[in-house]
Length: 362
Image (cartoon, rainbow, N blue to C red; front, side, top):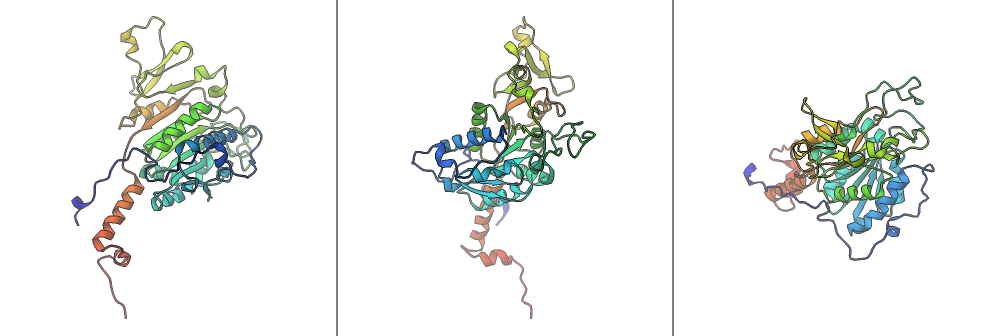
């Protein structure tokens, strides 16, 4: 069989295609387990858990066809608190385990719950390759810019100069920007939201679940014990209007009181924030960048991600940066297996394992 005989991939628009649904009416109660939730008082994880438990009934899926996979960290206790299937796996390896699960079980909706330390330090390679391969996973990355479970060491997203138990004189590491990293890995769905904004968080989760391919949602999540106030600029009522840059597909990017700030192309080819004159005419307003989350080229989305100060957070675009379609790793792998088995004979697994060259010894 030549390569031209292989079936062409079909781009499915629904990330939940093939996952059995139920007609039974569901509520948050059905998705909450009987386990005591054991996070520190005031932890942002509570808000995310409540949003996910409240959102899952909307999917109309059977609980036995949903699986949450986590690594190690505070956020990785998530599977215990959901009455679905779950795997509390190995530090940093949740994307790898979830890749195998999604490939072997197309009847499952597979989610990964991870933190900035779990995903971006020991698990960095696994995360990057899951995104690069476009595995049909929904990845929730809880970013509190600190190691919480091990009691307050600096993490891959901690700002330069942050004093922690492991950096008593201040961190000297340049932090990761998770959105920039995901876009650089060619992720097909990349978004950022905030733990305390229930409405926005739920809307982003809804889009991420519906996307067929690798969805990464960075969630700014406060750690009140070891890094309290890390996201005050985008959460505090007195600051967020000047700090949050809302991203809405098809709309000019403006923010601040009365839309007094806007985003335009810079002379260097990137993007920059400018003040919008009170008397701006149509010609001036035409300079404003219109957000295009569906552009195949991720250049503009990447430029927007760079508006986030990787050090002391002052401004941050919030919303869906990129949402495009591309064949998924698990769909293509299953197609190859079906083609190979069909070539060697239905169900002839041994011929597939043996391949064309075999030897008899002795």
